[in-house]
Amino acid sequence: MNIAAIGVPGLIIILVIILILFGPRKLPEVGSAVGKTLAEFKKATKDIMGDDEEKEKTTVTPSKTIETDKKDIK
Image (cartoon, rainbow, N blue to C red; front, top):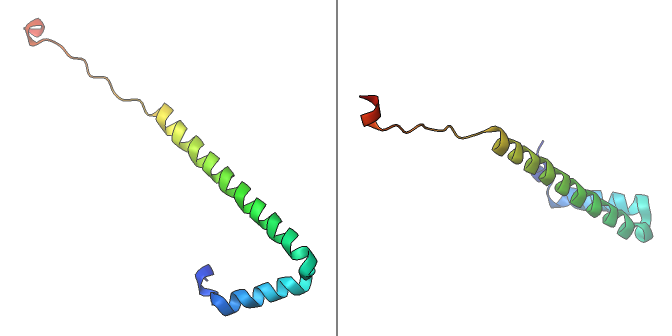
């Protein structure tokens, strides 16, 4: 089941249920808490992805090529 499959009627039903459960006075607090949670989750995932990229940069080292003069080899 895809989240996009909910549609507008499904979102309206969910919002009405939330409004009934928490009431109009608590709704802004609930929305704020959800927003802060999502922002913190995004920040944490960016930090994790940044850590992975840094590890890749430090573990992968370019191979050095040794340049020799052809005259020295003969």
